[in-house]
Each structure stands twice: as structure tokens, then as C-alpha cells.
Length: 105
Ligand SMILES: [Zn+2]
Image 1 (cartoon, helix red, strand yellow):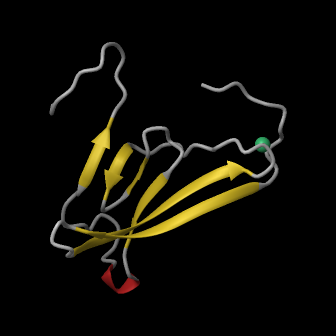
Image 2: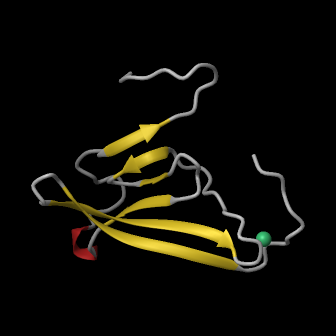
């Protein structure tokens, strides 16, 4: 983890990208908004807290370094309310201590 600096982090730069997601046949599977925040003065990236790492096409996750918020979005007429998704799509990742292990688990 990087050491803190003397900056008070009083101003921010926000990067946001909206993605239109498709499958291998170019059929629309969803939309996502990716957001990053940096201190505008010192450039230090901020991390998003309290969310799992990965990609959830029906919710929110963060990148492995925590610096990118990935949120599923939809046109408002398609929103069916909280907890009313058809299936959890995407992937998740977790940190473990010790030796890295590959493969599906
Ligand atoms: Zn700063």
C-alpha cells in the first residue's frame, strides 16, 4: 500500500465510461458504468469500499485494485426494482493469503 502524502485531497477528478455490453453474436446483454476518482491536486487514486471485486451485470463490483467502480445500469423502463433481477451474471474475485492457486474452484 502506498504511503500517504501531505495532500488534503480537497478537489477531485472523476472519470466515467458507459459501456454497451454484447455477447459474441453482438446481441445486447446489458450496460455498465465504470467510474474512477483521483485527487485533482496530487493525482492519488481513490478506492471504492464495501463492494466485491469482479463484474456483476446485475449489480455493482470493483476492479481488483478497488480503483474502478463497475455498476450495472439499464434504461429506466427496464428497471424492475431492487432484488428483482433474473440471474446474477458476471464474475467475482477474492484475495487469499498464501500461495496463488489457478483454475476454477
Ligand atoms: Zn491529494
